[in-house]
Length: 208
Image: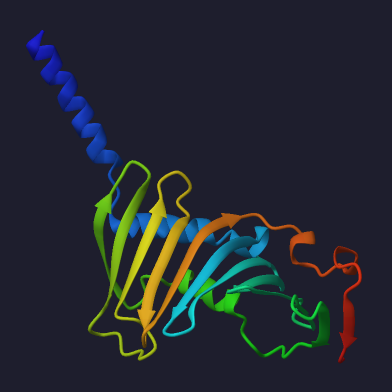
């Protein structure tokens, strides 16, 4: 019996070793999953912590060329929509929506955040710091060959084992900490389109 148990243990250990993934393999799988963002859309929460001002939270919905950003700054709220041709901006305190022409050459914050995920390992050395049943915890350290001044020295990346999507990505630069978290795939047209019917009584200012 003892010999049988040891044999079974050896088989299980060997299988576990085969299932183990290197940091590079995990990141590659994550990037494969986030490549679905373009076609299916995605949502996430972005938190920016700044000295004096505190933490600003934004929920982002992105689908193709359209996006919606719901901002919460202390007790004030605002919502921005864009289809890269027209922008809509709702000011909760004034109960007003301002419509304007988009600056089509501008890269949105959602675009910038997605690019950071697409190339999270570019210019960084990746180390697995911790692993649980639910997630991998990585420390991304800026490589010595990385000369980009705007890249933070370190980033903390957590990847879900269930979905291979990022759970969170946190970095600090010039005293400002940015955390991207709660990523989800799948956004509808309604999620990213301004509908006046959703804002009865709002004043609309068209500056186009």
